[in-house]
Amino acid sequence: MCGRFVISDTAPDLVELFDVDTVGEGLPEPSWNVRPTEQIPVVIESNKEGPVVRRLESARWSLVPSFSKELKLKYPTFNARSEGVATSSAFRASLQGKRALIPADGYYEWHTVGKRKTPYFIHAEEGPIAFAGLYSWWRDRSKADDDPDRWVLTATIMTADATGGLADIHDRIPVMLPPEFWSTWLDPETKGDQSLVDQAVAASRPMVPELRFHEVAPLGDNGPELIVPVEPSEEL
Image 1 (cartoon, rainbow, N blue to C red):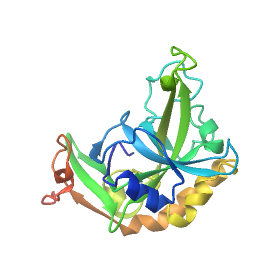
Image 2 (cartoon, rainbow, N blue to C red; image 1 turned 135 degrees about the horizontal axis):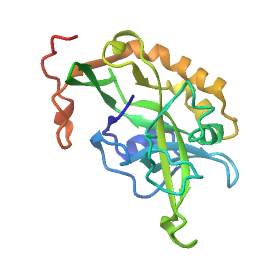
Image 3 (cartoon, helix red, strand yellow; image 1 turned 135 degrees about the vertical axis):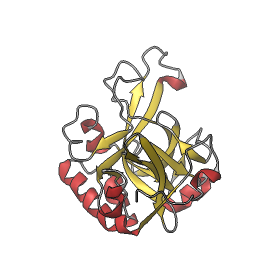
């Protein structure tokens, strides 16, 4: 699973990297310790007002389906398992036409031996990566129709089985998409199904052996010092 990640790029960096057309308001500052329910930058495409427009927006990290009556759910939705996303009541509507890219420098994972959990930072050797995500607009019905805060953009990161050396740390990894698959994944005119998800997972597999990882100190508050390597533990 992916429960913490790093995104140090600013909005102008992301606009250039993802060839974004429009930028939303309230984008979060860079963070080296992003937690579920915090705001994260997401890249989405929309065609509701004519031609497809690629947008950079701020979203709440934990997808809330439109049918939910509450913003805070009883079950975690910051990750979506790729194997069952097409049949999940929480995610299947988003898969059909609300897919996102979630930029990141890398993510943290914990290797557990007995009661000891050792954190690792997992990242690409160069440049940021893009997680395959889904998004949903949740309507807060306690707010008036003219209240700009009545709509909340929420998002989740898809995961798949870990392979290679990463499987020694944890059995799940986020699905990371290569640039040549970004447009395919985002295209709102493509109806998403399990076949598209399987294609995304397959496209991500060649990237996995290129990832690097190292042990880090227990996560503190926030800052670039969190990803500084420490001496490796004896378990790996």
